[in-house]
Image 1 (tube, rainbow, N blue to C red):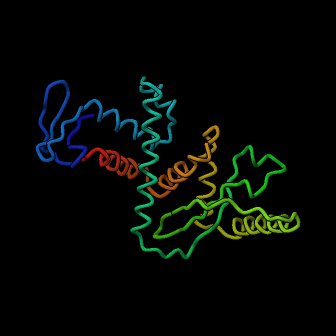
Image 2: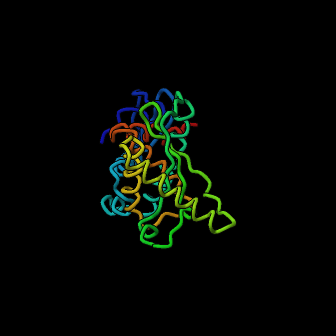
Image 3: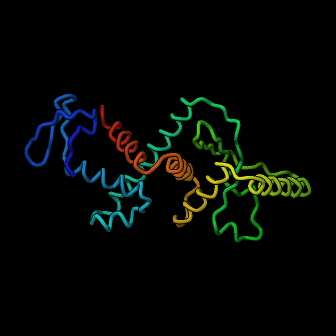
Length: 221
């Protein structure tokens, strides 16, 4: 892969230094072409839904190196999606609440909606945006708790089966994509949610372009 423009400012005014380094005549940043090439390749693997372990094996590099980059990518994507939503025209005429269970939790006959991850999704400007909501509050008395749970189950089934919407499609996409992870720490669930949101909203070549730009923006200063 030949680096033809500066990853920091996109200028094509580059000149060669020794040991595979280049310097930009516009922003004066110096960078290793080998490192840039590796970063770009890992970004492409990430956007192709190749997990960190497989990426590390294919590229013959340390797993932790790839995993650390994947963590950074997810955090950058989460921030990017939040900024895009903040700057969008907010119609929010289409929104749905969704209760996420892992496959293991789905098989548990005693599972409760109070244990589910509660998400609200908006379809706005032809894109999906999601927010994590607080867990549902437990009622003090068992009768009220059971009635409320039955209502939520009915509401979920009705909203998903009555018609097909972009949000319904996204919920299925989310569940399918999260299956490949063998357990997600609930503290990190937000970042995996935003990764799915990002990949659902943009075609793969656009994902790569955006991620390359935001990844190098963090080191621009």
